[in-house]
Image (cartoon, rainbow, N blue to C red; front, top):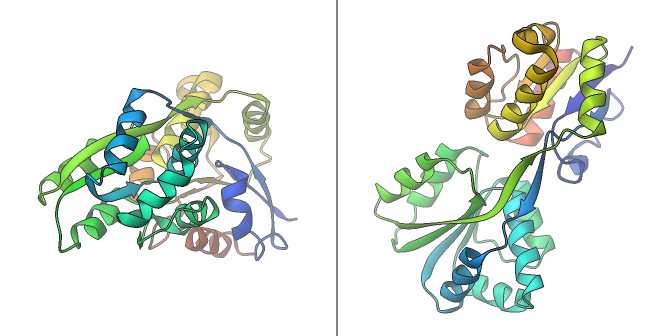
Length: 260
């Protein structure tokens, strides 16, 4: 019987990676979160500073940061100017999926942090021989660890929250919780700490303190150490974490663990 794997993330970002796995496992998606652009004066002021040449570097922490920034620039009829300004600065992104999203939207990427983790991104940015102002394009719930890690290395850090994450308790998530209760899920993939937290909050709403027990017998796969730590804080044992926080490696490690 084919293994039933659920990825808690947006299908448009994961689907291109699944070609080698579709014949081995049945993959479905559920989204415990939805990203909404945070369209306010902070982004408008960021665009003014960017066009004036203030920033030595821009850092996009995930595909959602790229999509939100592009959507808000387009709304202001400034997308072409955003693209031109990015060429004149240095755009650093986290992981191949973020790089692909930038390229798809016409933004020139200067370099890619090797792993989708805060520590890897800090280390990558700090390898730059230059210092100056750096703008972090990310969620309004971003970790302070990234700010502190860059400031300690001499960067002037500006946090630019371009999207907010909202809990999505729609039909897809309710169907997933039903499947878990009925024992119809073999493995869960949790890409980020935010996805892990949102999923566990919804599972706790359904099952109360017994939420971690509902996951016993399900192979839990976490993208990186930070996601693993969030799950362990909820009392959930993580079975799979790849050597590098990379989606392709996560899927390969998971299929090996499932024996398919």
